[in-house]
Image (tube, rainbow, N blue to C red):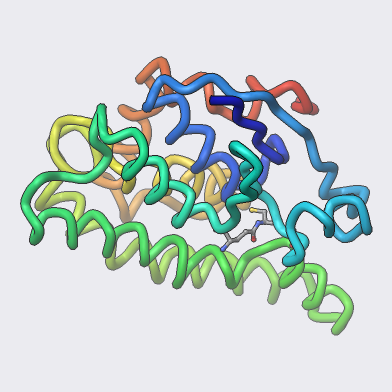
Length: 212
Ligand SMILES: N[C@@H](CCC(=O)N[C@@H](CS)C(=O)NCC(=O)O)C(=O)O
């Protein structure tokens, strides 16, 4: 099966999908989209993803968008190794962890939101407070969940979808210099996950379009 991932090295939504693909052991081709140059807003990329956001995953004539639903597709089409636990209540917890990041943190800190704040002339200290506030708000909810359910990874002792989302969000938090000291369990899980070879390979610095 040929897979082509439209990605951007530092962007967290494609980073989630790279982790998922690597954990499933699936090789893919990489199509870089330059977000700084606004390539995602152009006609060419719009023909791939009408929402003008990365990631998009091309597979067998289909174009899959929305990172969470791509991860769900991966899980359904390639069940092993499983990224969701077997028990329905456990699966729900993993999906809730994903929801905190994908629905309640990331959309508020996305590039287009930060560019909107800049256009509205919001002073930089207020932008920083916005970013830090929403990340910390979500992490406040995640920390006790990971402390309770994590056992090396965010949930349990093997990587799940929660790690696919947590690792990029912690990368983002560090990039924006968020104080992570109130979140020891969360940080420990994210840092442990980074040692997993499949997750390490998905790191922004290891992408063909990395600018370090
Ligand atoms: N909910 C979408 C979010 C996708 C998204 O926001 N991607 C960001 C990069 S992390 C993007 O393409 N931003 C470009 C922009 O804001 O113009 C998903 O999970 O795939």
